Image (cartoon, rainbow, N blue to C red; front, top):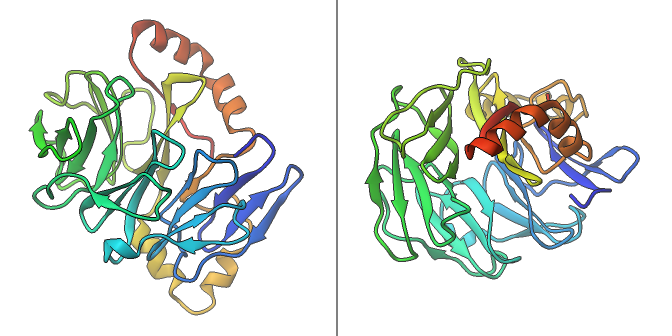
Length: 287
């Protein structure tokens, strides 16, 4: 997103906003339904994790190239762009992979944790470190090449598969297929959020508000990715799901044009109070 253009991944299609309206664009073979769509640091660049493979576009989705052959995994579960303009991290096959050249080459980060990594997160106050969730447990690696170290206690509801992590000092949020969990003491104690968020839906996306890092938005889905994939595999369903019916489930947003303005207006008071207290606040992602 650059303020005028944005990309959106729907159930079975991609859309681009050109400043006036949404238009469908081509999707790489094997990409529907999308698992993740993440904006790169370079203007026009985006990373798309689909049903299988990982793809990169450098021209606002007009063309895509495959950048995930190194993983040798059936699919990529998460993509995070962090650090330099070409630094990208991907979770595939239970392993965290990192690239410093926009996905042209990859290297694994640390040893594989027991059970395999499900999701990763970074603490802005700890640039070299990375956090990971697996099997309801949180692990931490301080530097590249350092083994993973288990921290805190397991999530209160298990099995709970993690989809995203957000960390700020001793505060950890984990979006799972059961609900959203929060710990204010480094994972030693977990509590579900008590701000009216749904506890029975899948929490799949955690997005920080760039202008106010203490504010986070979480996206919920009424059905799992696997259920969506099975539905789209039925004859005739994919074509209907490709229509831009925005009331249906949207897996991942690479940024709606008005996302920051609307979300910020709705949560300004909450964000201001949380920022003063030095802890992240939580808001609902726009539907």
